[in-house]
Image (tube, rainbow, N blue to C red):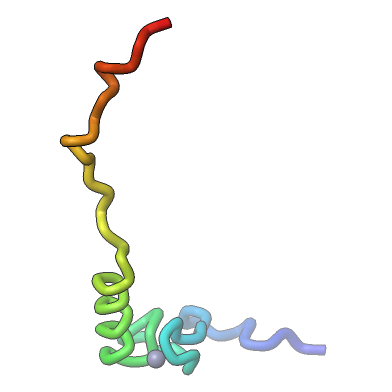
Length: 66
Ligand SMILES: [Zn+2]
């Protein structure tokens, strides 16, 4: 039995997270520039927003100190 892809000098290929094709070295970990942009858009559209402190909802000062 031989180990698959064990002698390849380049990075191990992995599937594109967008379309599951094999990624390319240029656009790693994506298969293409297009999928890289799709992933980027997904970031913005799926609500990966930075948690913002709701400054108008802070009531730590009003918590009774028992
Ligand atoms: Zn892709």
